[in-house]
Length: 225
Image 1: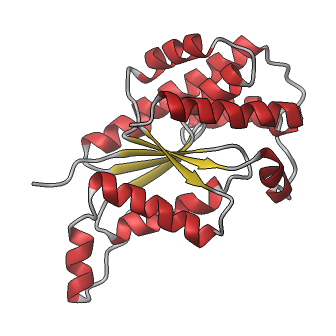
Image 2: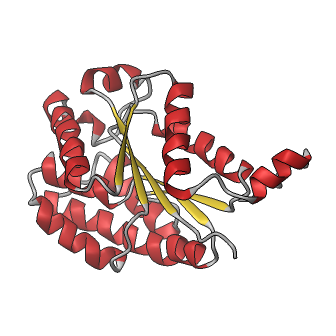
């Protein structure tokens, strides 16, 4: 019987290393024989990309906190309908750079909205879809900030107090749902972080079968997108 698709989300504050860990994770999953699609939230659809520009890039557009939260939800609703659910239905793994936990933390814990309200609105936007696993790349605010050498987006420019609330918010979410969250120390070297992520996934979902059979036979694993 074919292995079902799984929905894996990488979370953490900017500078935690999601952009480098996501492709490494996808390559490893493909090498275990899984079909994988990747996405980012907000984004990965025409609707989501347009909303992303408003939320993160266009500094000339003012967005009130509640409106900001709802824009993220709109982008996420489209992502679920257009990318995530079809992939899972086809038995494909989905690896996403952020999902609803980011909304709860950024607009709830750090942004001043009621986190429970954000969660309830999120359940409507996603149709109740939740990740099988949320990998939280845990890092302190100062270390994460030092890693950011590119220009900051609108959220990243909100200051150190905001970043500290993000760190605390993610920790609170991980404590709230320990069965869904796996906390990985992102202060370590990238290879050690990648190894820890692989260990969590292997423990939860197994090592895969097709990839292991090909590895034993010496046959290459076909690239899947």
